Length: 440
Image 1 (cartoon, rainbow, N blue to C red):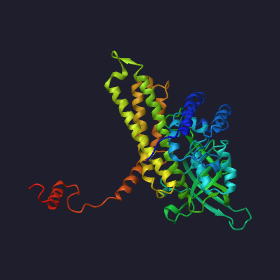
Image 2: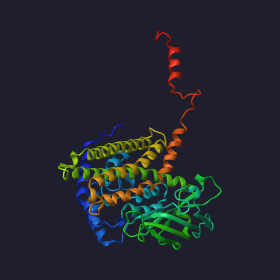
Image 3: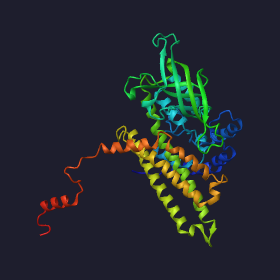
Image 4: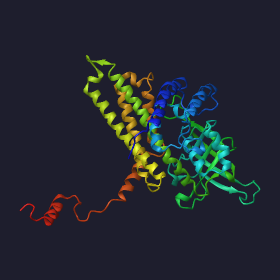
């Protein structure tokens, strides 16, 4: 595994680091409202955004998660990891660089599974940063468990008639459909064959936001949001919402496959940005430790503070290397040197470790800052609260732990005898049988 950086790309990273610190972090202060980066109707924010995006495009750094044919440079995941470390420092930076979730994942599956007409209508303006999108999958009664989904879709009309009058009808409720209030379209997973095996039971549809029957019941707030009735995670009812036959992504029954194509990338990109945000918290902790005195000494001279700093540095470096290794495996798969699916377990590891590292590092940084840390004069309290959501984003952490353990349990072998294979008396007896003169 080689994570070395060539000089030309290092120059781009250096430019990004300066730009994010000077411009994107400033943007965060000018427009700090939750979810505002997805609000295309906010004229003031969009006016400030456009010149920054133009600078990014001039550097060839726009939408780097996609290939050249879709407007991106086609960087591999290792380079994206190094870039996302920098972008993770700022809430606005992913929007400025055209890599904001869920639009990145939605763009990827439109690119992979969309027809030319779908790409022209939905992918092109999404890639241009003119609109935002929503991924509508989880449900109130079933969470992220597809086996419990009840939102369904059925056909009305003849798909083979060529009349253009046939439609899919979608009915049911979805939960935590992030940024639906600002989205131009929603990607919706619905059951199209309840009797089919789980992985063939669902299909994915593109639903324009203005479609009759798309009803946002509430915009649910989460921990850290200032207004409990004004969040940006929508509870939606699809009340017989109708879309043409050609608004399915992939084929009937391929919704699970289409969704998996985006979820892995989303998880690793979340992990990449987590590294950057945690590094910013460590930078704040270090500054505080050499600037603040208590009991006659600098904070950094107290061993308890030193322990918090050391633990944070070690945990983040371990996590960073896990993320880079996972990114390297994905690149190896893309190059054909590893089999499809080889990254699944490592993506799961990143997902599980992400929330823990975030909460540990943010918590220590908050403690080192004392009462100032829990105030809203610093970003740490908001980051700490917002990090709770990482345990649920892209699937509950407990589910990934279970999947990871099961994957390795399948590879385990049953002990050959009554005692474990590492039983010292048994192994010693075998060693003496092989070398009877060794202890003569």
